[in-house]
Length: 189
Image (cartoon, rainbow, N blue to C red; front, side):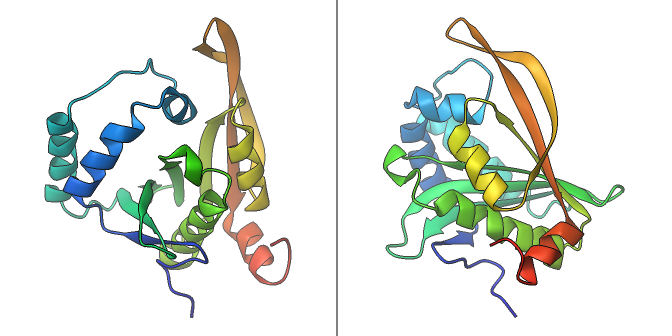
C-alpha cells in the first residue's frame, strides 16, 4: 500500500501557522505567484494578519468538507507550498487548489507530484468519484501538469479575468475515479 502523504519529490504535512505565515508573507510579494493563484487584485497583508488566519484555520480543527496540507520537499524538508481539497460528500466530488510559492521551485515536478498525492488521497482514501480544478488560460505550466495527471478539459468561462488590460478565460478540468484507476493499472503515467 502506498504512503498517502509521501510522493516522489514532496510530502504533505500539517499546516504550521508560524511557518505558513512567514512563507506567505514572502510569496505574496511576487505578483506572478498571485496572478497564477487568484484573479482578485493583488494586495498585501501583514505577517500578523496572515499568522492569525493560519492560527484560526489550525484551531478550527478537522472539517469534513476541507482538507488542508503544507507541502515540503523530500530532499531537504523545505516548505514550498500548500494543497487544499474541498469535499462535497453529497455529490462525491472534490475541488483542489494548490500553490508553490518560490519561482525557483516552479517547473521542477513538485506540482505534478503534489497533484498525484492529492488524487491518491481523494480517490483511495476518501473514495470520491471526481476531482475538479480551475485555472487561468495563461498558466500553461499548470495546464501541462494537470494533463500529465490525467485531468481533462470540462469547460471554459470566456473573458472572465482581467490582467494588465487584457481579458483571459478560466478553464475547468476534472478527472473521474475510474480514469485515475486506469492510470494506476499501467495507463498514462
